[in-house]
Image (tube, rainbow, N blue to C red; front, side, top):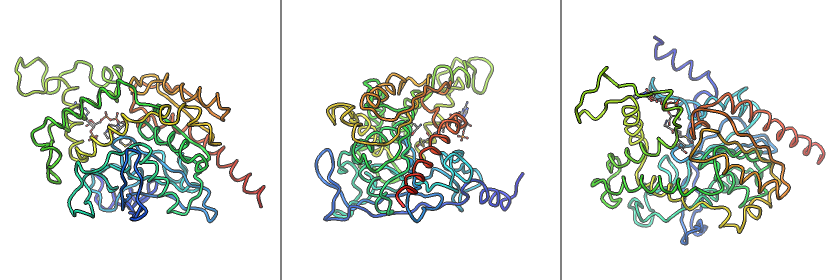
Length: 400
Ligand SMILES: CC(=O)SCCNC(=O)CCNC(=O)[C@H](O)C(C)(C)COP(=O)(O)OP(=O)(O)OC[C@H]1O[C@@H](n2cnc3c(N)ncnc32)[C@H](O)[C@@H]1OP(=O)(O)O
Ligand SMILES: N[C@@H](CCO)C(=O)O
């Protein structure tokens, strides 16, 4: 077994090595963020990480938009991580020589507005009352989330991003970014996402929220930090997690196998008989350790509200103003964000004459494939980014 020192050294020399989360304070009053749902918010603290170096021309930046429960920690390790800690959630894709090659690109990832991993959200202190916002936090939309990311990009001195990339809720942000700030991105990669959350998606979110709100520990959102509706939040995650899997992956991983015994117990307790039950309980338990219930309510609502077509009149109106090149990818086993939904985006982009590539990737892993199928992502994204990078270099050379 590796010693602590060996583990530390191995981490320091793998990928981007040790990283730190940074904080930016934006929308300092009177420059409030005007929210889509009405009202305004400020100041807003944003937790973000960067990997690689920004060029003097500030033309090599890539922004990663994370999904529902992700965070700014996309790559590397923190120096004080314990031995069991895993690297950032997309570590295999980010680093020297990797797809988001930090020898070449400056990669940014920020926690979303409304989140609970450093960016202002319902658990943050409202500077006007000195109390956590809790349910006094205003309703937010994907548009508001993108406003904050866009402001962070400008705060870092970057006028135009080489690429914006994200899966699921992250993909919604990519589309919204192209619609809202069409000139701020040169290319856009939208994975396992859609231009609107389906009715089925809203339905699952509704059940999750109900699980949280009916937990007696929810206390109308007035629970103390570190406490709260653990049972309801775990249940919400268990339900949601099923939607991130596929029938095939559940069969593959667990089938009907039993967890700790060879025959049925014919007992109601302990509750865990099958491996899949144990797995879901584990996913629920892990989730409660890292996520806040009020954030979950606000962010799932933001997803429910997302509908580019109704917001901009049509998808072509929404996506017609940008000159960005698009890469759209869906997964054949994803029943939460389907290929049909990705094709709606594709159709609109073709209709308005945009440069777009589309692929339906084959994977048994359902919606979460974009977190798991790293090799596929490498094969698809590396050349797409290289092309964006080269065309940028040519354009810059022509200008000088
Ligand atoms: C997208 C963003 O922006 S970031 C947010 C992404 N992160 C998350 O969603 C965190 C939650 N994690 C996950 O959803 C998944 O682990 C993924 C998608 C990240 C990776 O998927 P996979 O590699 O297929 O892992 P899988 O879903 O099989 O889970 C493995 C875990 O289940 C545990 N497990 C497997 N079988 C069982 C079982 N029968 N009983 C209990 N636990 C089990 C494993 O021990 C392992 O635990 P660990 O994560 O502590 O190491
Ligand atoms: N499993 C990922 C993707 C959900 O869309 C998450 O929790 O963020």
